[in-house]
Structure formats: C-alpha cells, structure tokens
Amino acid sequence: MNSLLEAKNISKSFYMNGKELPVLKNISFVVNKKEFICVQGSSGSGKSTLLHILGSLDKPTAGDVFFEGGSLFKKSENLLAHFRNEKLGFVFQFHHLLPEFTALENVLIPVLISGKNNSTLEKRAHELLDYVGLTARKDHKPSELSGGENQRVALARALILQPALILADEPTGNLDSENARKIFSLLKDLHHKMETTIIYVTHDADLVSYADKCWQLKNGVLTS
Image (tube, rainbow, N blue to C red):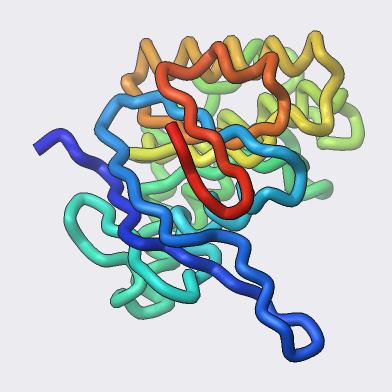
C-alpha cells in the first residue's frame, strides 16, 4: 500500500456569539508516499486549519485523519506528541526558532525532545545546515540571521529526524520573492533527493508550479 495519510470527511467549525462558522466542509483525500502536494486558497480560506488538523495540532469537528492506517484522533495526547516529533516535520510562516540558541542548537531541538541525542544525529544536523547553505552561520543566533536564513534553519530542523511527512504552512509568506523561490527550490530538491512527502499551503499562485499535485480550497470545499 502506497498511502501515507488519509483524511476522511473532515469538517471544522468555529463558534462566534453562539453562531456556527463552518471553515472546512466534509473534506476527504489520500496522500501517497513521496507526493509533493500544494493546497492553494485565499487568506482565511481554512488552509492553515486543514494543515493543523493533518498534523494533529487541532482536532476536527467531525471526521478523522489516518496516518499509515492508524487513526490520529484516537491516540492519547502523549502519543500524539510522540507522533508529531517522530513522524512529522513542521515549517511555519514564522520560523519559531528559539532566540537564545544558535542555528545548530535550534536544528537539534527535536532530537533533544525525542531523547535520541547522539553523535550520528549531531552529524546529520551539520549536514543539513550545509545542505541549506548555512555551515558558516551555524553558530549564529536567529537575531544575527536574515529572514530567509532563519527559514532555512527551520527547514533543517524539520528534517533532522527524517520525518515521513513535511507540513509547510505558508513557509515563504514572510519572505521576499527571491528568498521564497530559494526556499521552494530547497523543498523541491529535498523532495527528490530524500523522497520526503510534502504538503504545503499557500495563497501565492506563483508557488503552485513547484508541486506535483495542487488542490484548491474555497468556501470550505477542497477540489483538485
């Protein structure tokens, strides 16, 4: 079976002043291993909400997500935290690096959380920083790096434990067009070289072409 992740009948509503605000409406799809998928939609269309549900950072109002055949939302919070650290890599619009740590130390944060700290993974952190072109900046803190450099550190951090799936939420939304192209070129390259499955969301039509498959999210409905 080539399926990695399956969303089944995902719906999500928020409630304001006692009124229901549906954001996602009965969404179902399958993501196969090694796919590079884009979800495009305007700001406020629910793209980030969908990605957060796929990554178990938020729960749907209805429906479920299955990863490698197992239901995510039947897991305990402890098991979900372990799942996110072991199986997923997140890249957000804002890099969320820890300001008191160097680039190298930030890349190693998931390793420390996992309790797997060893020389092999530290070597991998150095290799990933080299891969994203930041070897010379590994001892610099986020305040000493540019926005594009910080996002490349965040990408290396997402890859450190070799996750089965990368979820990228508007990963270039805070960058200029040149740095945006660099980040997506890196994503495309790692997809081919490391055969990593990637789902990214964007409102930018210029970034759709990097994906092998693109879905549109509009009025809570996902279409291919």
